[in-house]
Amino acid sequence: MADLTPQERTVLDWLAAQRPAMLGLLEALVNIDSGSHDKSGVDAVGARLRGFLESHGIVHDLIPDDRFGDALRASVGRVPIAHLRDGVPGSGPNTTIVLMGHRDTVFPQGEASRRPFRIEGGRAYGPGVADMKPGLVMNAFVLAAFAKFGGAPAPLVGLFTGDEEIGSPFSRPLIEAEARRARAVFNAEPGRPSGAVVTARKGGVFMQLAVTGKAAHSGANFTQGISAIEELARKIVALHALTDIARGITVNVGIVRGGQTVNTVAPSAQAEVDLRFLTRADRDVTMARIQSIVDTSYVPGTGAKLDIFGEFLPLTETPDGERLYRHYAGCAEALGVKIPVEFTGGCADSGFAAGAGAPTLCATGPVGGKAHTPEEYLELDSIVPRAQALALAILRLGQG
Image 1 (cartoon, rainbow, N blue to C red):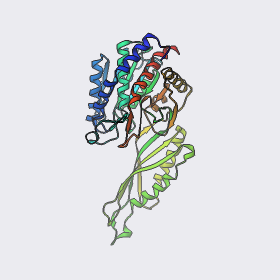
Image 2 (cartoon, helix red, strand yellow):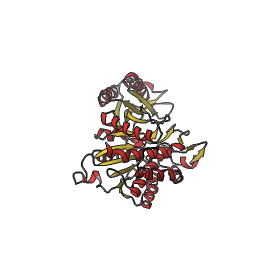
Image 3 (cartoon, rainbow, N blue to C red):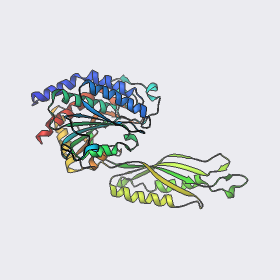
Image 4 (cartoon, rainbow, N blue to C red):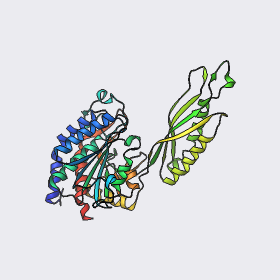
C-alpha cells in the first residue's frame, strides 16, 4: 500500500479495523428471511441497515411501497432525492457517486432458521451470504468511512433496494433517476469466484404464459376435450428452439403447471419463461418470435396469453464503463490486489443504471459463489480488500 496519501491511509486503515463489525452486521442480515415477496422481511433488513446508518450519523430517506420492500436511500454530502426532485440545484448529471445493492433474496421464509449464518474454513454460508448481503454491508461501511473522515470528491448516494431478484418493478425508476446524475455507479453484486468484477451482463425478460383448453372426461368423452397441456408442450418445444447460443440468446421454460385430474383432458396450463439476450435489438426480435408462438394454436381450439412480470436491461460495455473499470482495477492494484473483469449471463440492476447513461461497474462486492443455492458461500478474506478498493476508487475519482 505504497504511495497513499494520509487521507487515504486513514480511510483504509479504519475499514481494515472494521472487519469484526462487518461480520457482525452480515450475520444479522443473513439471519433475516428476505425473499423478494416477503415485504416484512426485506423491510426488517432495511431496519437493521437504518440502525447502522443512524449510529454513524448518515442522513437517509425511506421511500415506501405497499407491495415490495421499501427503498432506503442514504447520502453523505446531502443531495435531494432524485425521483422526487429532478431539476433542482445539485441534481444534474455528473454530480454524485452511487453505491447500489439489493436486500431481497430468492429464498423462502424459514430458510434463515434452517441454514443460519455460519463460518467454516475461511468461508461464510447462509441464504444471501454472497448475493448480496455482504455487498450491502460493504457499501454501508464505506459510506460510514466517508461520513467520518470525508474525502469524497462528490456527494455519495447509497441505494439499498428490495426487489432486484424479480426485476426491480418498484426500484427501477429510483435507480434510473439516481443514475442520470451520477458520475459513477458501483453495484455491489458479489465478486465472481475468480475475484473478477463485471462490465457486461445479459438482459432478461421473465414471463407468465397461460394456456386455455376445454375439460372433458378422458375416457368417456376424450374427443370433446381440448388439451391445454398438449398445447403448452408444443409451445415449449417451439420456444426452446429460439435459443441461439452463438448470439447469446437463450429461452428457458423453468416452471410448468396444469391440468385438473389424471382422468380429465386438461382445461388449463401455465408456464414461466425466461429470455436472456445481449442487445436490445435481439430482445425485440426474440420477443416478437415468442409472441408469434403464443398466438399460434398448435392444438385447434386452444388460446394463450403472455404477461411480462419482470425485465432487466443488459449491462452493455461502453468506453465510460471501461474507463471506470480501469480506474477501479488500478486502485485495487495499488493495494496489492489484482481484479480481472468478466462477462456474465446473469442480470442485475446495473443494467438499469448503465441504460440511464451512467458509467457503471458491477460485482464490486465481496467475492462469493454458488448464489441461489444451499451451497452459496462468501470468501471472508475478500470483505476488507473489496471495501478498501471501492473506497480508494472513490477517493481518486477526483483525479480523473
